[in-house]
Length: 205
Image 1 (tube, rainbow, N blue to C red):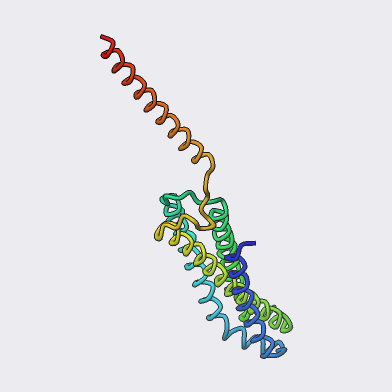
Image 2 (image 1 turned 30 degrees about the vertical axis):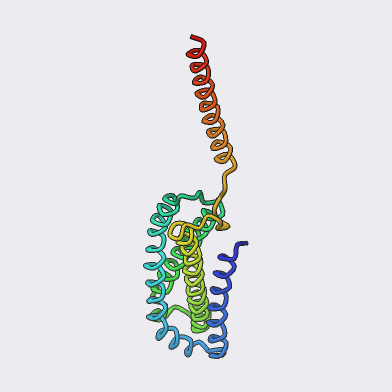
C-alpha cells in the first residue's frame, strides 16, 4: 500500500474514532431520550450528508482535470500514479452512494410515526451517529488522498522533477534514441567516405 493511501486511511480512521469516543461519552440512552437526541441531531447529519455529496461530486468531476494534467507532463507517469487516481475516484464514488443512502434513510419520518416502537429510537440514533462518523472519516480520507496525488502531479508537471518515484523511465525510448544516434553516425560516416572518394578522384584526374 502506498504512503498516500496509508495517510488517508489513518486520517479517516482517527476522525471516525473521535466520533465514536464522543458517542461513548454520551453513554447509553433510553428510547425517549434517543428520540429527542435524534430529532435534534437530524438537521446536522443531513447537512453533513449534503456537504459530502456536493464535495465528493465536485472532486469526482475535477479528476478529469487531474488526468489531463497528468497526460500533459513531459515525463511519462507510471501506473502507480494512475492507480492512485483510480483509488481516489473509487473511494469518492462509494462515499457519494453512502451519503445518499444515509440522507434518504434519515429523512424518513421516523420520529413522527406512532407505529415505531420506542426501543427502536436508540438503535436508529446509534446508526445515524455511526454513519455520520463513517462519512466524515471517509471524506477526510478522500481529501487526503487527493492532496497527495495533486502534490505529486505538481512536483512532476510544475517543477519538472525527472527523478520522481512516479516517473517511468521507458527503456524502449532509450533504445530508440540509441538506434537513431547510430543511424545518424552511419550517415555521417558515409558522407565522409563519399567526400574522400570524390577528393581522390579529382587528384587522380
